[in-house]
Image (cartoon, rainbow, N blue to C red):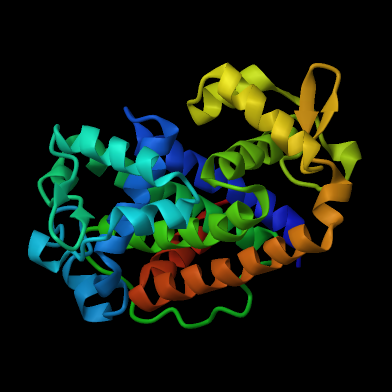
Length: 299
């Protein structure tokens, strides 16, 4: 079994890429708000396996009457963002049909989730999550998950898998937001963490395996202005979450050894197991495992 910190670095890359796909053509804050609203809207489906299956594929988005609105205040609290920032951004995008408002709150309409761009993002997230499953198995993770359920048949359940992975995304960032202040700081820090290991073997939390990353590269990847990222990095350095090295920045191994970050890494492992157990009950893991075994036999 791998270090919990190694697992967090691997899954950070997966989630950052998921947010990147979800935000096109939105900026980072709009994307994070959209994921939070969309996930709250379908919370009822997450608790009902029959509904998950009914509205699982790309051609079966759940209708508007099944979506549970979420208040703007609840969105702001979840991401630790100012209420007015969230309200203003939701109001702006509502003019283009991205949200609809009710007395209970806002929701993302079914029509928007039928758009070609959303379908493409769902396909990308599905393929990326399948690759993550194979990588984690190779790291010795997920060995306790044996409830594969009946194998999924027919069109791939892109929407159901997207809902399950988005739930994991929000669970993943919640304790990091609590430690680092808000969702933007959390995203910038995770990108630094991910980028530090790309020049090596992509995993490893000791400093010898890490490379500093430039602020401009972090800004480009998370879709924020360089000056915004620079200010955020200064705050992260002051808090001891990052350190400077020349013109770059990195997340030191000593930071990942701190009890609060070790607790975050262990909680991430638990949330990962929860996500893949839900995928197993849906029958997705049986299909992915079969494909992995077929690839091994053919090698």
